[in-house]
Length: 303
Image (cartoon, rainbow, N blue to C red; front, side):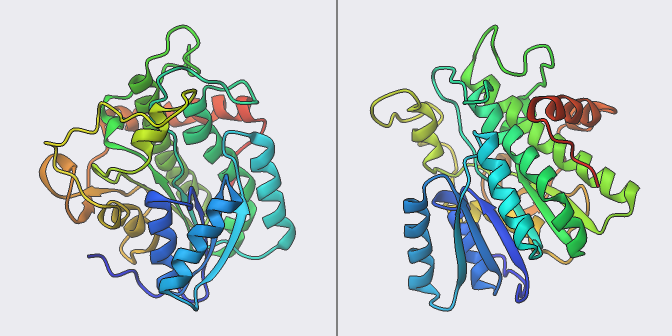
C-alpha cells in the first residue's frame, strides 16, 4: 500500500469527502499530517466523516465546509470564503462525482447533472482558487477521472445531452473532460511558469455509493447499477484512492501524469502511471473545452 509522504504544514481541500473515495483521501492525507478541508454537500454527513477520521486519528486537523458542485453559487461562496481567509491551499482533490443517473436531471444553473458536478463545478472551483494555488508554491491539483474516459467523447454540439440522454455516455464524457482539464492545466502551468502541478487518476473498479446513488437520482430508493458485476475484479476504497493520492503527493509526480491500477484491465492493483486515451490528448481539445466551460460558468481559469 502507498505510504503517503509527510504532509505536515500542508493544507488540502477534498471534494466529496463525506464518503467513499473522498473520505479515504481525507483520512490518508490527515494521517500524513495535512490539514484537510472536507468539502461536502451535507454538513451533517461531513461532520460524521470527520468524526470517523478523528476516531482513528484524534490529532487530525479537519474542517468541514459546505460545497455543492452542482450549484455554481455554492462553488463561488466556498471559494470566496477560502480566498477571504487568505490561507494557502497546497492540495486540491477534485474528487466528487455523480455516476449514471437513469434520467436526465438539470441543476439550478440549467446544466446536466453529471456534467455540472463532475466537470463544470470542479472547473469553476479550480478557477476561483487559482490565486491561492499559484501563490502557495508547489501546489497540486488532482482530477478524478475514470476508465470510462476511454469510451468517452466530447460532444461540443450537445455537452448537456439535451437532444438525447444516455447515462453511461454522459458519464464517460464527463470523465474524459476531467482528464482533458488535468492535461490542459498541466500544459498551461508549464507554459506560464506557474509553480503548480496538475495530474489525474482513475480508481479502477471500486464499489462505492456512486453505483447506487447515481442510478437513484429522481427515484425514491437506491437502485443498484447494472455495472456492479460480481465477476469483475474489484478493490476496496483504500486501494481505489491510491492513484489520486499518488498524483497529489508523490515526489516523483509531475505535470500531466495520469495514474491508475496496475492490475488486470486496469481495474485493480497498486497505482502506476498509465497512458491516457489518445482522444484526451488531441491538439486544441483542452482549449475548446475550457472556452466552453468559461462560457457556462462565467469564470475564466487563468494562471
